[in-house]
Image (cartoon, rainbow, N blue to C red; front, side):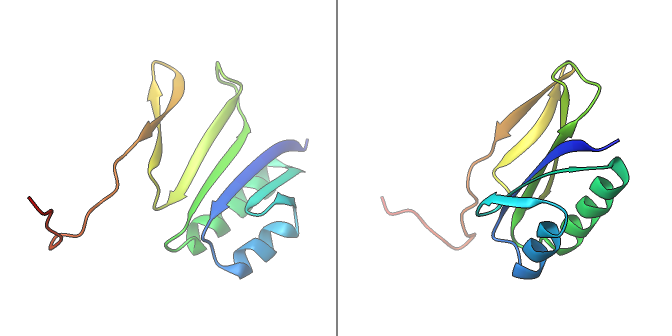
Length: 105
């Protein structure tokens, strides 16, 4: 049975956006919404994780959890989902500075 999914992308290749738009609607740039089966959802997510490159992607889909949904992430990102006693929370990480970058005093 089809269920709703949302895929949010940032800085991904154009061909990935095209592949996602075959099964979903790009409602705003980088946000894809659709109703697909679990099998199609998993195949789409596999395509995303294989081609995300330096970009970032987030998948939100229904799941049998307290919140009623599950999150998956791929690529480089500042936000990381963590499990906190059965609830998925988002951890923010700092930006990484270059190793030879020095701060002036």
